[in-house]
Image 1 (cartoon, rainbow, N blue to C red):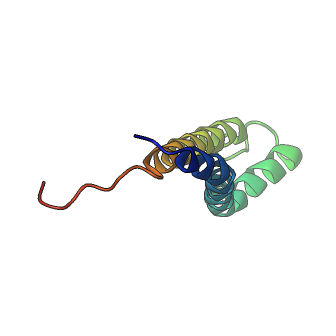
Image 2 (image 1 turned 180 degrees about the vertical axis):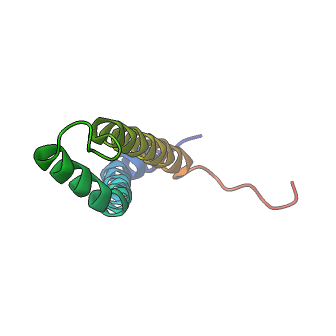
Length: 97
């Protein structure tokens, strides 16, 4: 039988898990940005000063790939946060059973 205390624990834990999820997602996003920023800046500068025939790579393609990778990371972190919250407060199974 569930106790009302368990429900309150989950209610107060939810914002903590949400904050942790947001921090993980933000840190991951910054990691992706820091690895892609030099190439994006270079392509952006080239698109500003060069003609289309002289450009190396495509700024559009790089931006789409950055958005796709970032979206996948955010989705993974949200799913992880939900799983963490679902597992909070549930009785732990004894090992070997």
